[in-house]
Image 1 (cartoon, rainbow, N blue to C red):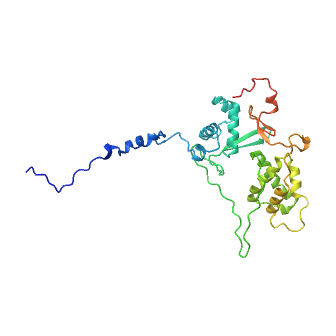
Image 2 (image 1 turned 90 degrees about the vertical axis):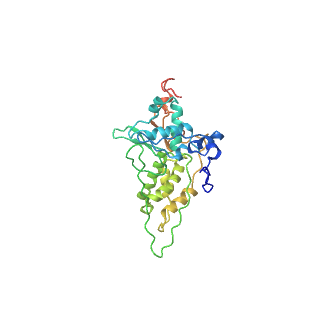
Image 3 (image 1 turned 60 degrees about the horizontal axis):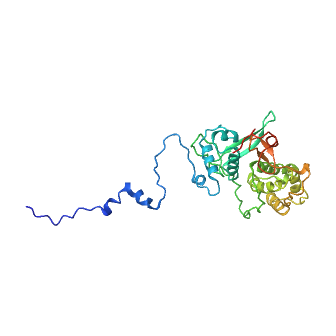
Length: 301
């Protein structure tokens, strides 16, 4: 009766003293000193942040953190330099530099607009995915898909469309600079109806015009350079013609030692690092009013 049944398989024994238990996997994984994530699922009061921002290779840590804070705010919240400096200890100078970083990499779009009363105000748009746009329903909601402009279908027997020639690129593609470039391109058709451009053409050519405006040329001078001495024959590809002219006739960068005449200087609009008001200057910094105020009027970090 006490004979053991040798046909029964022995019970499986735990391997490595239970080291394969799911709850102990992270302990073994962390022997190299890496991070352990103790994650819980959020069900309310959260903001979705893309790794393209959280792990951005060029943005500073302050800029990444500031972008996360801005994206978590409700629509209409104030994010001017003075408000952010009152909220965080970094100070106006560092916050202004971080905002410029986000603007350069497309996470912020700041434009200066004139109100009906004549006052210039700054409009700021926070982009959670640079390169895409669309209205959002609230914090945490993704952007609406951006409809892509479609060109008319190629007719039978029509040769394939060639890509437009490359255009010069501005050193600092500020939103206000690109907006001025777009206005120049949109106004070309008033001088010659053959220079009617599509939205896709304007998007391609705008950086080239911005590169000209960066060289202290007023929009009227750029308009004249693009419309003067046009060929008499029909322009089958006006965008290609303008792209070639933008690249071939790009003026040199004016030397800093030779001051330009006041009527030819048109610096891009900047946001003052102290008061956040718009002013024109070659480089970011403070407006004339803040530079002449007594020390301590606008403390910086």
